[in-house]
Length: 151
Image 1 (cartoon, one colour):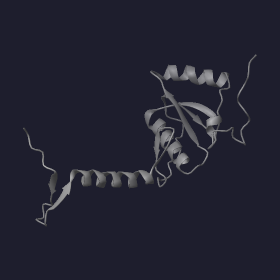
Image 2 (spheres, rainbow, N blue to C red):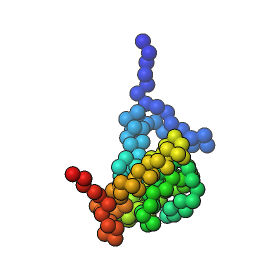
Image 3 (cartoon, rainbow, N blue to C red):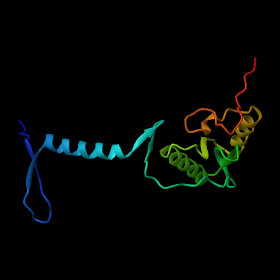
Image 4 (tube, one colour):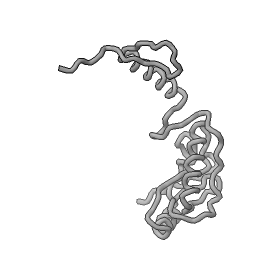
């Protein structure tokens, strides 16, 4: 039989007095610390949002790549490189943390620039809905509706 101690000795390397914490006390301490950190952060659509995060400007949309994003200010689709794609993603997170309308929204990453261009052209030609450009998910007031119902 293996004997499992009911307490775990926790001490500091400075030679200070060692204190004895039960496993339950240690778990409780970790959970309290974790829940206080979690209160500082929130999630939206599965993304961790830090309300104190600094502003991240949207990309310039001039660096071509295979990541499809939508420029909510200029109202156009763009295939951008990895750096610009992640800059757009961080801008979206900042917008969400401040309950503001996003300036840039990521869509997807494709296997090649050409594939991205095909999807970009499809979204332009079909006038794909861009209601994701409003903070609450509703159609933006300044932009005309892009939803089209075909009989």
